Image (cartoon, rainbow, N blue to C red):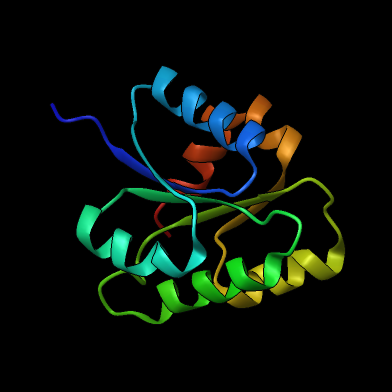
Amino acid sequence: MTQPLALVLYERLLPGSQLVNRLQDLKYRVQAVTKPGELVETAKAAKPMIVLVDLGESPSGVLSAIQSLKQDNATQHLPVMAFATHTTDELKAQSQAAGVTLFVSETAALNYLPQLLEQALQID
């Protein structure tokens, strides 16, 4: 059986590489994207099972990329798990408006990844 593919968008090296390692430990293949503008085209080509994004220090570009992902017919079905160092109600609302399936803190993303993946991948 082929391992599922996770697409990970991150700009900050430490949380991004930690998340990649955790996903690989969970038997996921991982493809990293470091520029928000490449997210949609990479998702179309790679056909991942899930997309994980680090909202980083300036989330507006990343949220715009998520919105584009959700507006594209070829990628709108993909679940998106977004994480941030500092979570606020405003950032959560902006994330949900952009199409994020699950919004969590960076700490939660790293510590509870298996459970969060299961939650994000649930089909309604």
